[in-house]
Length: 366
Image 1 (cartoon, rainbow, N blue to C red):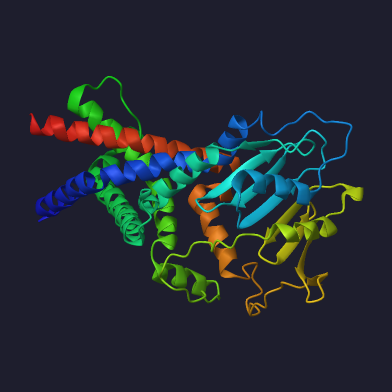
Image 2: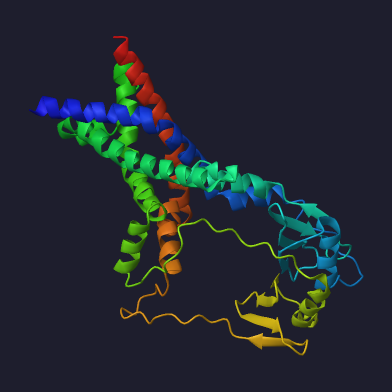
């Protein structure tokens, strides 16, 4: 009976390996890039982040936007990150008719440099989420990619559990021997040990990544987790929504100068979208404005009323839960060490996969 059970588990492990390996390799390798994308982008763009400070006054935000319009003709959304340091470039994020762009702008001359790395970062993120099928501009392809990722993630959980089951006899003989690699071994025995040891060492971390990743794969899992925190997920259409493109009226750019006070320079983020303007400073305070009927700016509150949390938890909204799950998924909850370990496990997964296929090849040719 045990022999039949082990044979079934082995065949399941082998079958899932063949079916899910390619998408899992794409998911795990892209995860390493996504994990450190901000650091990578920062290094690549280091030369674009600094400018030569001039004695002349900085350009007004409206002048910056006008300069962007001259190059891109139409933009539907714009945010500007203005640093208090004189040698920092202004970072603008805009929506064009084709895509979202990040720009590095000299605040004295208005010279614009595009950030090409963001496109690569977006591609890697979509690889991780839906195998980049969303770039086909077809919602069916995006959903198919999302489901392939979800099914592959479930397969990874089954691969881990079945692998532990198959390696259990060796674990029972001695944990120390089962968890260490002997370089005296050769051939099939050496590959088996590498595959088994790496599998055991990586199992817990891979399970954490896989199970938390399912939070974004299936609505019922997200709803269940949110309910566990006493929150209700807002009902949304299943259709994938993109930010609507509504070209900004350049005549209204003058209003953004009114909400930006450069007399007391500090790190500031300005956002203009449609008829809404917002300003956020380095200390986190944020103010919102819109144009009144009389043509003047009027400040208003954008606060969204949230149902009070009966458990007095720090999780006030579903977004708070999502961020918490993401911090576990990426290892951020364990600090920089956690991020490094999770990334290393993703790389080791490749070795785990290669050793598994080499084992299968040697087994067939025995």
